[in-house]
Image (cartoon, rainbow, N blue to C red; front, side, top):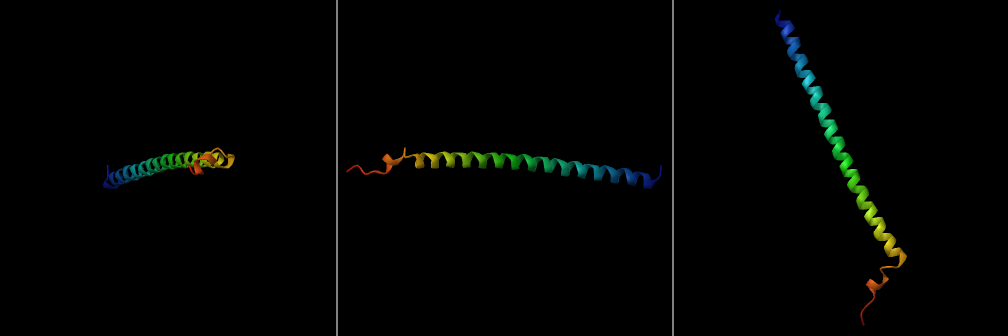
Length: 67
């Protein structure tokens, strides 16, 4: 076996490892992005529900003075 063959094998292993590392990183970033989107959707839903309570008049009693 020649030195060129060993060099090609080592280069293939390094490049394969880099490809796997990049794929793993992309998957982790996609999962974090999904989690952030879910959190943003929940916050928007909570804000929408709070706005609908204010518009429906249920919270009018909270703004009246006691005197």
